[in-house]
Image (cartoon, rainbow, N blue to C red; front, side, top):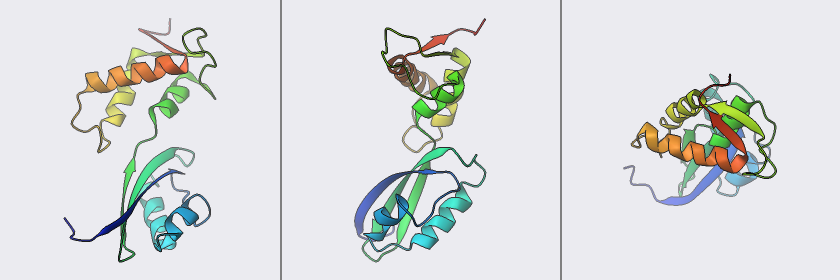
Length: 148
């Protein structure tokens, strides 16, 4: 523990490697007097191995002395499901219309990626997979054994 007093927790979604002092990053961090350029430089360095259009969740912990820490998480499950199904959007009427199809293997691969997140690192793959299946169902994406 650092012993610093936390002044705010800021949650943002920023494309990998594309943090700039412009909105949404600038106003969110600026109001807590954080060094925008330091955040952008560090965030972009930590996400340079990812594709530039991937939206990643980041939680910034701002301290009263204007310092900060941040944790980068993998993209949301809905992002992965849409990519796997080749969709721009989910289904309009979940449960009635099938917007797309993914395989059980896709669900398992997404679960392995999500297990690296700090929130999910102690969950087993079955629990994460069940959560992903529920998200797919709510988006109107069918899960099949294989695509044949």
